[in-house]
Image (cartoon, rainbow, N blue to C red; front, side, top):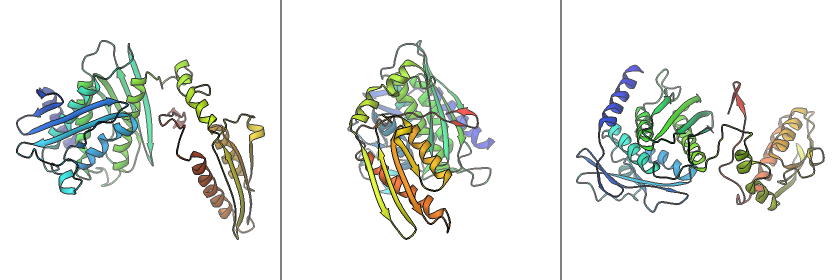
Length: 366
């Protein structure tokens, strides 16, 4: 609402006017009340320190950089006179020890400190941009990052995440866990300023506030990874895109060399099923490698398109009790297909966790 946004903007202005003074490497003070320590962002490596801001859900969101940006992140927030807190203690009281403190100050200062560390990472030369849309259940947030060759402060150019969910009606969630949602904007505004990146976060859809916020952090993390790698995800026909993700890329070829497959045959009172999947890049061509016959035209088409788009050979046959209903066949084939894919993926060896797919939603390319 307007009062909440005005409060957030006021906090943002105060934070942007405040100077963070370094007291020692990777340590900063927030006014005279809080101290940040072990502020680290390491590219493609793990930080030896924990993430412990005193706001549990905020910790969980920052941790998305570890998983989805492949950047080792750590930061610890302590209050004066409370420096002996064990950040590895995961009790509710310790993890959320500052939930009732000034979260705008904490989240803004953490954002500024992490942004400063992110600015030290190595980026490709020249003006660069990166875009990533991250689905999380029903939620979908688009992040666009822009970093200019001449450096300087960045800014939060778009932020349309509120309201955080459908309920309460017309308001969304004010808190997720112990984190106040209005200061998510404060965090990203400060990250943008000190990192030198322009950040755009646009909610395309989302009914659950938790999912919306997490989708935003994941989209930011993956867009950041692409920005550092110099992968232009805005141009799906570029040479660099093909080099990173195309059928001739090292990751694609090494994945095929694993010859991963899964097979399942089973019979119940309702259905007799055979599903066989081979992750082979459709080496023989789709006509020879996709054989689907379930007795349900829509199911046959769905599985066939899935196989062709994923470039995997598949044999799926089902003899089911269609004279009763198509439910048993469609359900059992889907369950069997999921189990077979799980077997084929195995330990996920050879998978590129930063893979990218192209689709459309509402006429917009995602």
